[in-house]
Image (cartoon, rainbow, N blue to C red):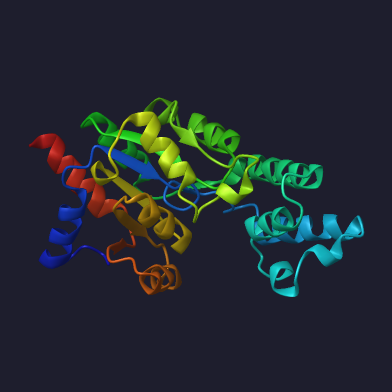
Length: 241
């Protein structure tokens, strides 16, 4: 939705009302991490690295063709949980994510929305499947670390806790002493929606394309925006109230 109609504005206003804590997914709502550093190439490189070690059989054909590095990582972890192999694969992915931060593209309106929400007294946290090292490096480049620190909850060695598991959301809520109903999760994938639902947190979908919007709505998201601009307007109204 573009939040242009009165009904849509009211829907977004109702979702935002009373929010004390905002849980942000990272790659999507805050930036396009792989805007200049292809996630598909990273996934292929991880699969090729496994193949070069005679481990081609660890991935199914659909997993090899997923073009999603997290699919590759989780697939190996399911078959060899907690192994040195998984730890090395995760570190390789982290290094690729760190390289990607140099060309990451900020999501339009994300920076001012983060600063404005902080200014009106909301507390913010990152709840992501990306490495927390990557998140900190990107936020530092945008001078946004003070808006979130220390509440940055990303990928750990416990890969079974990646979203759609609500682990990172629950860590954030517990650390901030926040009730789920006082929070709002902003995410751009069905796994974000499912994690928010499992944690009891209201969800706002962000979709930069019709395809992403359809995926979110088909998964059950009821409020989806294609721009953060109407959210920024609402929060600015709160600041002026």
